[in-house]
Image 1 (spheres, helix red, strand yellow):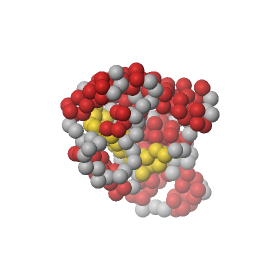
Image 2 (cartoon, rainbow, N blue to C red):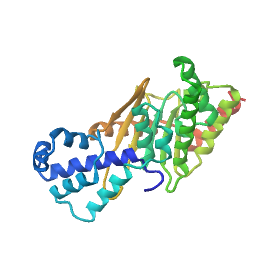
Image 3 (cartoon, one colour):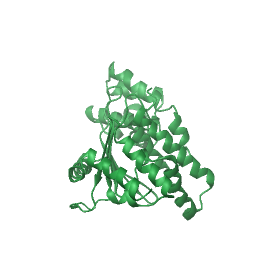
Image 4 (spheres, rainbow, N blue to C red):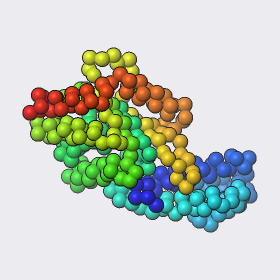
Length: 290
């Protein structure tokens, strides 16, 4: 399994493919349950990723759906990989489930598009900026210091996606106000903005600033749009995620995720190009956060 693969997303991919194969075979969940002597709820739990699927059960399902090699072997590989833990799985074990699931999806993604109107996106944060951000959460919600450090370290693990092989393709639009919103002292802000400028020069990173004095016809809060490559010849559709105070919304309907993509492309078109964006970031670091 590639190091950047996420077991939880491999499980989601397997579950979606089993549902597709059942529908392709013209069977309902209840009919499958009757053929195999299972309960209808067992089929539902497997297809909704409420539970994993044992190798023997997967073998019976694929027999029923008449799945031959090589696709059969690819699905068994997905099943094996979905039961393994990697570094990110360990780092996020104590996180709220939806937040952890978002990080796992990000780790599996081929490309991520981010619109961020409030803070620097997590994939581009310095360690001290991230710590200042989480320190605010810690003070409001009385979180233990160990929780803060786990979140900071998980953020640093996430950032390895940008230098893996092949690297994550990241496209980001940041509202200009983010460059002026203080998190920590001047040194933290200065270093953070310089990190943004450095990251914008990576071949796999596109970073644009949406100007404050421009036309802003879209009143959308921040969101992420994730696209996935095929793994073992099994596709996974695009998803969009929206974070809120206590969790993360997942949007998986094709029409809805496409609206997020169209929205992002519109925001990108309204933003400064890459070079002027980089110049603005460095100028703000020098003039506002000396």
